[in-house]
Length: 210
Image (cartoon, rainbow, N blue to C red; front, side):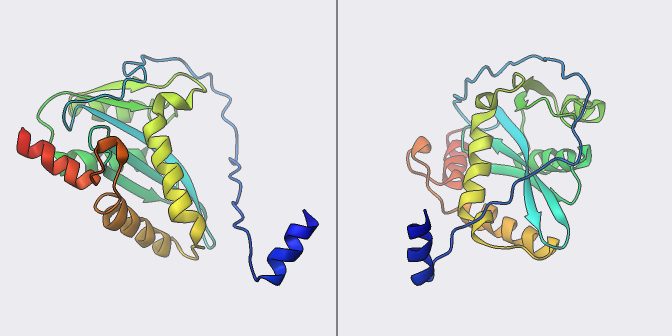
C-alpha cells in the first residue's frame, strides 16, 4: 500500500475520495411492507407504462448534503423528471413527479415503483399519484434490486459526474446535474439495453410507433 502511495505521489496522481453519507437521525418508525406490483419485472412494450423513482444524496461544500429525486421511464431509460433540493422532504419527490407528468403527458394508467421511504409512503404523495391515475408499487424492505434501474442510474451519475468534481455552491451543483442529465445522459449516452440508442432516441421511436 505504501509503495502504491509513493508511486502515485511521484506521478502526481491522487485517488478520488468518496465522502460517506451519514443520516442526521435514524427513523424509529416501523416500516410497513406494501404491495410490490412490479416484482422486478422491468419489461415494457412502450413508454409511459412503468416509471421508477428514488432519491440520492450529493455533497455541496457550502450547503452540506443535498438531495436529487429522479423519475425514470423503464422503456426508454430516460430521466423524465427530477428535482434537486437542500432538504429531503416530500416536496422534492412531488416536484420530480410533477415534472415527469408534465413532460410526458401520459394517457393511460402507469405503475410507479419506489422504495418504502417516508416521502413515498406519505399521504401527500399518495394523493398525487391518485390524481395522476398511477398505481403505486413498493420495493421490499432492504431489497435494492427491486428498484435496480434507478439505483443504477444514480450510481452512474455519481461515477461519471459527481465524484469527478467538487461542488462549492448549490447552484453550481444544480447546473452540473442539469447539464449531465439533459445534455449527456438523456441525449448522448447510448444504452446497450435499448439497442444502443440514447434514451431520447428510444422515446421518440416509441412515440412514432404509437
